[in-house]
Image (cartoon, rainbow, N blue to C red; front, side, top):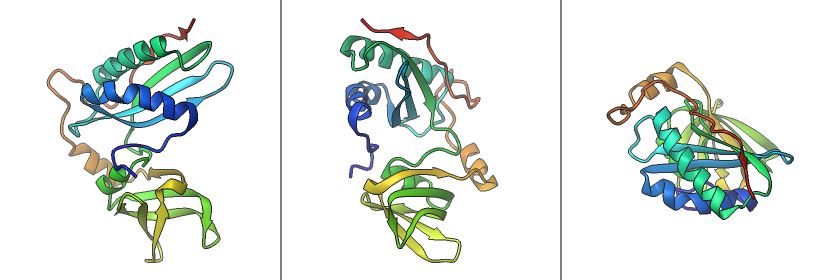
Length: 192
């Protein structure tokens, strides 16, 4: 598994493949793409800055404009849809192997699709990933290797240590807003 890419399938994979080259060229990384709802789907794009700095509202606006234009032209979603672009946030999902490595040492909660030793949910300290599995040290001190391909969801747990580590992140580029924000949501789109 590529440590720079999230695992997506179906429509989400098509959208991720469609927008990823432009997003990367702009200096960002896709953390996750999700399509929620049926009647009027919401396309959620979660992004990071490639330079590791905190993502700003202006960054989200730039990504939103680029993604909106690509989706309008390529038309992968029939009918009306809404686009949401945001940062991954402080208690972010861990979608890529590189996320597990970046946040090694922090508390996580994870759920796998296929039970390991009769168990699907795990909580403990992230130890990193080799690109195939993510490792967690459980509260009892044992270590477990969770296959990334079987990961249903995983996210950081909000702790004082995580808040402190996030505060030490590189500041956004000049002119950026260092206030954490989920970013703007542009108006609804109607595809033809």
